Structure formats: structure tokens, C-alpha cells
Image 1: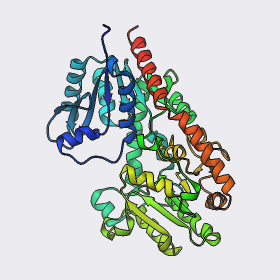
Image 2: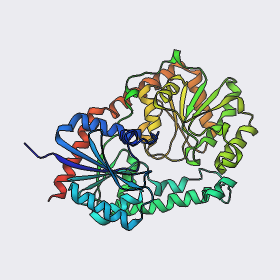
Image 3: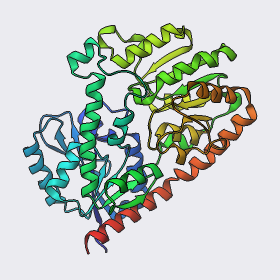
Image 4: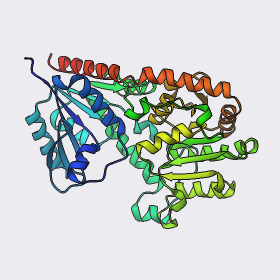
Length: 417
């Protein structure tokens, strides 16, 4: 019997099965990572051993067996010297054929390559924070703006952007030192080879959450003239542009309503407000939008699914994206998509067929695109079917498992030469 392929993942979060076993809160982020693991194990469980390194909210190094994988956990604030020694010890014990680094900007990923080398490593690119930093303010004048909360937490917009730049330097260093990257768009390809011209670029899409494959948007079942959009955490997500467009939409559709997941700014006391959130609340007051904007707070998968299906249109107004999971989820359900033409969006959305695109800076164009979906049922149905068709192919779970396994074999074979 052939020896199983030993695969070591580096993640920035612990998976839900580990949180449950340790009695820790389950994270609402990183659902793609759980889906990745699920499709890979479904197709190749008999051929591999999966080991996962991740930080956690504990006080000591730990090892946990959960979900048919062995998890190696380190405290979030472990010192560099101690962490480096521990990472090397884990790598020496596992002796992985392939090291799969999920996310490019994390210190422990860069440190792992420092102490263990990167010959057998492949780096999955999510976004590219070194590029995102250019667009962080998203057209707003946030330089020098802050709130009491920002000062106390040392988390002003300026410092947030500097953090992107700092992590971006780690990212660029890591891409320059690994031989292989996995990407999904022509945008991340262009930036990867610009950083490291000799990098071997592999294409592999990401699976979506299981429930999104088994539901479908229905024009006659949605709430007419409603918008569902990305969470409003940072300027990059572009909520201020959507709010600038909303009064223009409201002229034609007085009953328009915007639903937003994530942070509930309606219940947020002033002393917990970020500078960007304060700006959002000011926009809502100035444009008299309080009665047509609802903040939903953090949503579990089932409620997210319901919001997508209930919306007349999904809007992604980001100033930069690589491959937006939110757009992909909307498309696979068939919810009509309007998205800014930025980053890798051109690879997700064919304008007029699988969604509508507009220039990020132009709120007037955004308003017109939303109104066109509201006013033209034929167009809405065309975008729904076009988005669903392309997303079902792009996110086919069996094809993704096979592509990832093929990449692992290629990395293993190349590193052994």
C-alpha cells in the first residue's frame, strides 16, 4: 500500500470542530477553509494525513485530534523565538510532503518559511493586503480622523492602513520566497508574478458553504426593491458609496430597503464607534436614510442564506477585491449581482450576463444599475441564471478537490527533485 501523503496546513483560525472540542466560541469567518477541508477529505481521505497549525485563544501549546485531522495550536501572542522553535518541531515530527499556507500576510506563515524553508510550500492567496493598502481609504479623507475608541485601542484609520502596509511587507517577502502559489483570478496572477517572476502559479477555486449549493433565488419569492450587501467593517468594503447611491434609488423606488450583515451600528454606543462607522452614521442622518437601512448584526449561515434569497439584488461596492466570496455565494444562489469593477471582479462577473459592473467611484452608476434590476424582471432573471450557471461550474466541489490534489502532487514531485 502506498504511503499516505502528509499535508500540513497553516491557518490563521481554528476550525469549528476544534472550537467545539475546546469549549471556545465558533468563529463566523473562514467558512471557505472548512469547505476546502470537507471537499478534500471527501475525495482523498484514504490517500492523505492532514495536519493543521493555527493560533488560538489559549495560554499554552496544544494538540487536538478533531475532524479527521491533527491540529497543532499555539497561543495568539507567542513570542517569535518560542514560536519559531515550536513550528520547526512540528514540521520535523510531521515531515510533510506539502505545506499549504492559507493566507499570505500572517507573521506565523512567514516565520514558518524562515525556520523550515519553502521548497515544499504552496501559498493560497486570499486577498493581497500589500495592494489593498493603496485603496484602504476608498476615496474618503480619513487621514487624521479618529474617535475615542480608536485612540484607546490604537486603531485609527491611519494606523489600520499602516497595519495593512506592515502585513503587506510580510506578504511580499513570503511570495518572493515560496516556489508555488494558488490563485483564482487574473488580478492575483498579475500581482504574484510581479512580486516573484519565477513563482509557479496554480489555479484552484474555492468551495462554498454546503447549504449554498442546495437553494435557489426566486424572483417571485424575494422582497421587491430590497438590497443585501457586504458587511460595513472597513472603508474598503465601500458602504459609503452604496449609501451615496441610495437616495438616487429612493427617488424612483421610495420603498427601497438596504439590509447589512456584520456590525450593528444602530446599537453601537458612541464610545465604541470607529471613525469610519461614525462617518456611515453621519451619512445616514444627512440623507435621512434611517428608515430604509437595517443593520442585521452577525449572522449564522442559515440566516445569511435567507437574506440572500430574500433580496431583490446583492451589491458588492468594494474599493478593491480579489475574488469576493459574497459575490460567489450570491451568484450560486441566483441572486442578481451588482459589483464594482475592481481587482479580480472581472473574472467573477461578465457584465450583463452574470451580473452588472460599475466603476467604484461613481455612485450615480451604482444607483442606475440597482434601478435597472428593480425595473426589468427579464434582466433580473437573466442575471440570476447567468450567475448561477457560472458559479455552479466555478465552485464544483469535486473539480476543486481534484484540482487541489493535483497541485499537491505537483508541489511534492517538484520539491523532491
